Length: 155
Image 1 (spheres, rainbow, N blue to C red):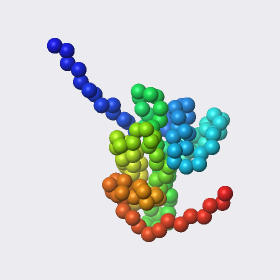
Image 2: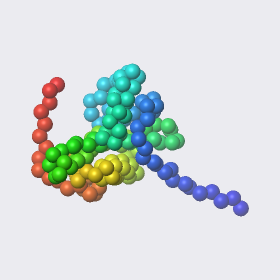
Image 3: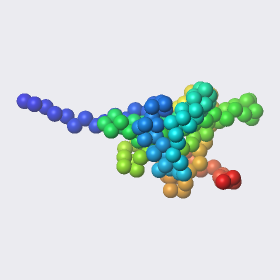
């Protein structure tokens, strides 16, 4: 008797690798906001610059092993403060899950990875900005609304 199982794919969060540009990383970011094309040289320079910051700036991704494409990403950077006994705050940015694969809890995996990282290096809080449309999602991830975001664009 042959037994077949329907094994659901396990999606693993990992840090961004330089080869991820060729796996659709920039195209994924374009689903979030304005993100012009980035040359291989530009990508490599920025990747090296961010990598040199070590744990103070982490970009994570989820790769769909079946397609080889990056399907989710997010980043956290660490602000070092004088407040709270020279405390640290994690800022989560650029969280996006590919529109074709939403609903599989990948966003939550990204947020958990980033918040765990911030906590593990001693941040006393982690913060993020989001649209009203995404407020419920972030509340489900343990965040709560606080105050108001303000912005001033230069371009």
